[in-house]
Amino acid sequence: MKELTTIIAAAVAFLVTAVLGYAVIPYLRKLKFGQTILEEGPNWHKTKQGTPTMGGIMMVIGFILSLCVAFAYAGITQNSFYKELLENRSLVTFLTGISLAIFMGAIGFADDYIKVVKKRNLGLTAKQKTFLQLLVSAMYLLTLWLSGMNETYIPFVGNVPITYGFGLLFWPIALMFIYGFTNAVNLTDGIDGLASSVTLVVACAFMLMTGLLGNISTNVLSAALAGACIGFICWNSHPAKVFMGDTGSMFLGGMVVALAFGSGRPVLLILIGIVYLLEALSDIIQVAYYKKTKKRIFKMAPLHHHFEMCGWSEEKIVFVFSAVTFLGSLIALIPIILTTISK
Figure: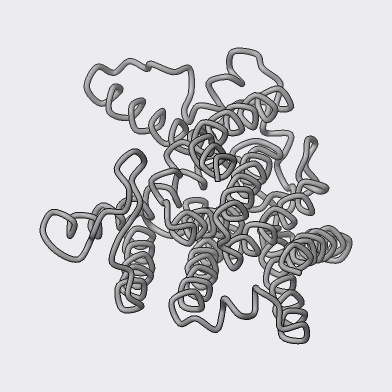
């Protein structure tokens, strides 16, 4: 029964997101919510000027409706998903994970709205965005603390207490972890289909992991995210008919982090989300090195633009980055797979 709930969540998220494109994209085009291409981007991106943005709202709606359907089905059948959510800790983790993603998406929506409607190309200021993201992240972690989260899993070490001693360092590290990865996913959204494709692989990795661990609620969330990503790729693959904007990339970032914490193994996001990490590091290294030497290490940052400047097509970058994500996910999951097989 739990597998059927997962399938329902993925299928509904895919169908709703994909079908919404027929209505949302023309509406965004009618409102003239077109993307403004920044001057520092690759010159050939100028051809994308005016492509509708803020399409991430399609994923958000598809994701939420899929969970509503899955929850309704679970309530009717009284299945394992429903019974797991009756546990206070599981319900809190489930709901706060969704809330984290929605609030991050709302920050992205505000940023997009200012860029597109108010015609301020940079959107929210860096200070405004940072404050809001850290506030949402802190509220999420506070909720986990209050729900009784008292340990985290470290590979080759096991469960480590996080409510006393050195374990308390987990919370400030987790705060920066959420903030960093959310923005790293945002940076990954730079070419057609990249963020949605990479996040699809990440969602599938967490779906497999939580399935093996018997974590049904997070398994359903992973499936819903995967379905929404596939539905969006139908419209966002090269040449993109719509961009997700910060509305979508910030939502994806929040959801990826929520899956990591919901799985009980957030540290594994370092491997599963290796592409996000490399994108963020390339940007940080480029800026720091340029400030110090007035020279650049990469032809352009973040990393996907470097490969564009090297002559790679957008399709090739999406394929390679998705493959790297798959390999990172496989490395992260091997111990869990082996443990499951040995039982």
